[in-house]
Image 1 (cartoon, helix red, strand yellow):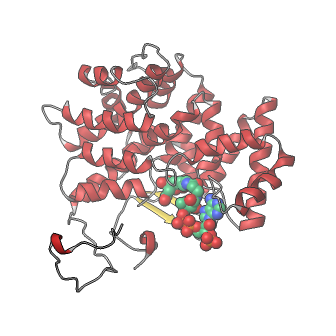
Image 2 (cartoon, helix red, strand yellow):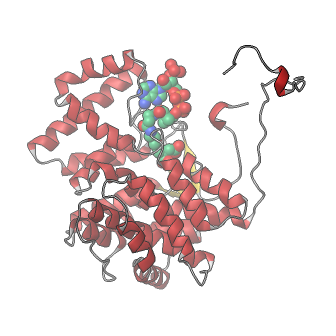
Amino acid sequence: MSKGLEDVVASTSAITFIDGVRGRLLYRGYDINELAELSNYEEVAYLLLHEHLPKPAELSAFAADLSSKRTLPVGVKSMLASLDTNSDAMDVLEMAIAALGIYDYPVLPLNEKAASICSKIATVVAYLHAHSRGQTPIAPRTDLSHASNFLYMMNGKVPDETAERLMNIVFVLHADHEFNASTFTARVVASTLSDAYSSVTAAVAALKGPLHGGANERVVEMVAEIHSPENVEGYIRARLAKKEKIMGFGHRVYKTDDPRAKIMRKCAEQIATTDSELRELAVLEKVQEFMFKEKGLYPNVDFYSGFVLHHLGMPTELFTPVFAVARSPGWLAHIIEQYSDNRIMRPIAQYTGPTDERYVPLTLRAGKITE
Ligand code: SDX
């Protein structure tokens, strides 16, 4: 029995390859460093969903299809508007994805459903952002890229090229990661032949857990608490002494640098300009150095991503919903792959309970109350 299914090969997959020893990450054979530097959300979403990089005509048709699917059904908008403004963002996202399934009528073919979910999840996050601040949500535009339109809906202004580029890098780096907990959850649900909306809703529920999503929120809070580099050693030692996990570090598969963290760190170094950003970055780099020295642990994708998301104007409480926006093409690619060669997932347990209990009638079950 392998606790947490560590190193258990649950299925074959042709989508993403991770070499945890060499720190390599490939989407459909393409190296993450090349995709982050040269590609963007639309190309990588197409690559994950359609198994090859799009030709020009395929890319423009896909991008047009995505932008045509950005608007939410009226019923979903009124459901979102009916919620308390302080509702948990990931709870709202779970509800909204399930609700999109209710309004997917007449039922779209699977690849249309996939494009619709990838497109609308961004609108949902922008909508819940506006609603949580008591503001009128900004309607999506169809003349902007996915990254540009998302920032426009979030911040109310069309981003400059640098911000759009940075948003694309965040989307590309988070697009897929093989059988991480939320993706594997989506595959288990899809393996029962449940629908794509239900599989993505389950994936969002899994990502909500702090050991999977949300670490970058905790990292930003930690950097604020540490405040300056000279406090790093004392702060981290105290947390480790209490056996606490330092968020943004460690990974089940990577036993060296997470390639995404290296790219994200480079982005952070390029965008840090203000005194507070330079100080925060110095704290992050000191924590990374100390964690390696003390625990031999490397940062994962979440360690620098919060810094970059803050720079893009994202509030901390929306970091995990933004992760879900980025991961939706990966979730859907895995759902489609699961359907294509399916067998219901049903592992077995190593039973540790009793095997020879005999039934005692209630009247004879007096005596001390057991828990
Ligand atoms: C992502 O799976 C994916 O691919 C996820 C992801 C994706 O793209 O989907 O890559 C996204 O990376 C998010 C991960 C964000 N979560 C965190 O940063 C939370 C903090 N990290 C840890 O909880 C942990 O490292 C995990 C959850 C990421 C991995 O858990 P494992 O593989 O079960 O590791 P473990 O808890 O068994 O730890 C092994 C050892 C332990 O030491 P010992 O008790 O054996 O002495 O390493 C230590 C742990 O205490 N350790 C840490 C640590 N992570 C592991 N010690 C301090 N701080 C940490 N963060």
